Image (cartoon, rainbow, N blue to C red; front, side):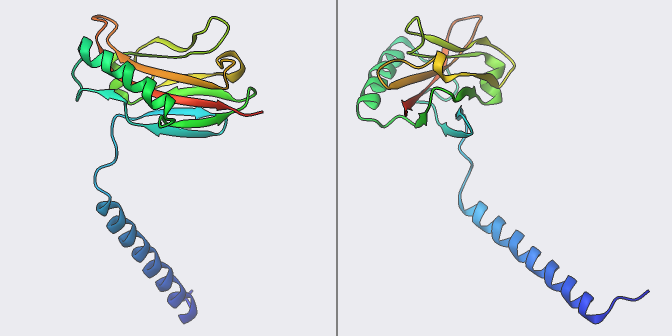
Amino acid sequence: MSLSTRVIVGLGAVVLIGAGTVAGSVAVASDKGKPAEHQATLTVGRSSITAAPACYNDGKPLDKAQLAKCQVDAKQARESKTNPSSDVVSSDRIGVGVPTETADRGWFAFTDGGAQGEAVLAQDVKGSTWSGSVAASTVLNSSGTTTVTVVEASQKTNEVYAVWYFELHQKG
């Protein structure tokens, strides 16, 4: 069985276009530099956002002065609305994802909402990069804006290595 000239030309065009697409994609990707590293992800409903840590010391523990500055900077970022943010409705589910390095060391996540004024999204997690998801209605506060804090910390030494902040803006 032989292929017709039309089929051969058509296959050649597909291969040529595919090769051009791959080459173009490689060129664009190589022009972008290294991908951002050490980012946490906040998933709200069917959407997600990622962010670099607000406080990070290249993988070394943060000292007390750095942690104090981190809290001041976080408050200013919340007031100026520069923290990474997402809209949320009470029926959404919320989850947190962290880099493998963070999961290996240990981490936890919480909000400034919920019945007790602090709701846990993940507690003393080690080895897992995902918090699971919880109902937004259980972790939001009544102000309309809820802060999600994610902390990379050693469970053995209690040293903090990174802190991420996200804001949830309640809609409807």
